[in-house]
Amino acid sequence: MKKNLTLTQKIIEKHLLEGKLVAGEEIGIRIDQTLTQDATGTLAYLEFEAMGVEKIKTKLSVSYIDHNTLQTGFENADDHKFLQTIAQKYGLYFSPNGNGVCHQVHLERFGVPGETLIGSDSHTPTAGALGMLAIGVGGLDVAYALATGRFYLKMPKVINVKLSGKLTGWASAKDVILELLRRLTVKGGVGKIFEYTGSGIKTLSVYERATITNMGAELGLTTSIFPSDEQTKKFLKLQKREKDFVEISADKNAEYDETIEIDLSKIVPLIACPHSPDNVKQVSEIRDVFLDQIVIGSCTNSSLADLLLVAKILKGKKVKVPTLISPGSKQVLANLIKSGAMSDLVSSGVRVLEPACGPCIGMGCAPVSGGVTLRTFNRNFKGRSGTDDAEIYISSPVVAAFSALTGKITSPAGKVPKAEVPKKIEIMNDLIIHPNKSGTNVPLYRGKNIKPIEKFPELENTSAGEVVLKLNDNITTDDIIPAGAKILPLRSNIPAISEYVFTKIDSSFVARAKEKNGGIIVAGENYGQGSSREHAALCPKHLGIKAIIAKSFARIHKSNLVNFGVMPLIFANPPDYNRIDMSDQLEIEDVKSLSSQKTLTVKNITKNFSFKVIHDLTERQLKILLSGGLLNCL
Ligand code: MIC
Ligand code: SF4
Image (cartoon, rainbow, N blue to C red; front, side, top):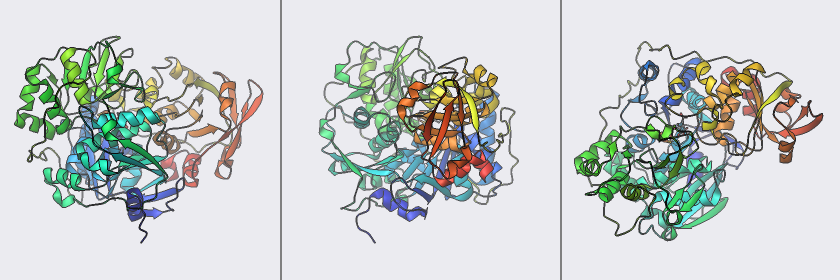
């Protein structure tokens, strides 16, 4: 047995089904747990059904309702009932509306150190705080794992993020991850796993670790992981799940691909300014930014520890700006009530929302036109709040609480109060519906918002089309399929939601794509960053988009494009991007040769020149792509 393994390698070795642990090579691993949420779940389970498998192959799978909780019409109420019957039929746990945000509840009730988890939500790595290998993926990958127990990925580089010292004053875990975003940007983590080590980790609770692993998604990381140690044991004991504790960490002489050092004692309160999580500044540099709204919550910062501290800061004082709080789970809410902290919050003037994603995904509480909102969330992409011209700042709950008391972005000051999580808390399990191990023969409820999944043909050998959109760097999946209370209810209805593709960027896109019978999209770096929503691949496919030619792609989105038979092609020579314009007629030749060749030629018929594109897909992915998608391939 080798004695120099990283924690990531240890977990992967234990779950390895195919391939070698060499960075960049494809591996197949056994998946212990899966999670879905309702905005991606309906599609994922329709895909699972299409695979025709009777029983799920994972140890534990959970279907959460947390995104489309407002049920503004029958659509999502119907989706939720569908999801509940699916869980009953196939033997999944079901966490209903109001029980909390999937990542928070998973941490509290289900995560197990050393196990593997994939989830159809990009913030699934939150469970890395417990020493799980937890990866965000598209719904089709979850469906495949449910059907086979397997998941494929390219072995990422493992980076040692060595923490020393300890956080002081008002600095918090959020500032650690904001510091990493400041240094590395939103594409700095693509193809990498961050493994946290060093003497500083023992000073961080699981709650703090979870904020860091959660927002690793904004770096584009495959995932982030902390070892399972005394802090993990303490957390699991508090959750009355001590039996799930396993100690697991990297070997002493573990070899990493790179090391990043962070001295926690040097971290200061930071803030991400509009409109990207890597646009980070020190809070003390921000002057006179008056706020229209503050929201404290989301899967990044809505834990009991976070909200107890906010309550301590607000106790006996009054907020000067509308301030909303959304606890991460019903359990957090129950314990805020039990400890008296909820009464302090309510007396200070905050509005209390249900435990759910809520405003984080634009499900209500949109700010005023041109307004400025400070949120403790993880993403501040333009328009994500539901108001296109609002400005979103992102900070820790502490900065949000101090700012609530002044009405403008404010540096925390004064003595840090003690706000410890009690030794005993109320455990909330009763809302979760447990599965009947052998499944139940319940009829599936299919509401009329749920449309059957579409079948696509194999790819043709020549793919011709017009450039129907030319985009810049860092296009998010929110740009492709916007968030918000108007569009989210349509997630189970692909023809209907496809009417909104790119509407925030170019309102004529859908009509043009339809008129041109699809076409090709040209983009810059890191295309498809952000969420795992497979709609961002499936809806363009529905409109006939054949290929995206970009300088580079975000990980989850690239897999989603492959899973739905859209070619993710990369400029061999990035400056060729500048030679292509909207409406150019392109022809991609010899598509079938993709299986044996890395390079394809694209003819620009309009401008009469050719350029080369490459791909970085594995043989397995190419087979899927050329078949027209994963469902065809199976
Ligand atoms: C998000 O935070 O963007 C979401 C909404 O949770 C998405 C999932 C989705 O679009 O349904 C994610 O992070 O994957
Ligand atoms: Fe929900 Fe926001 Fe977390 Fe996405 S980032 S899972 S919308 S709370």
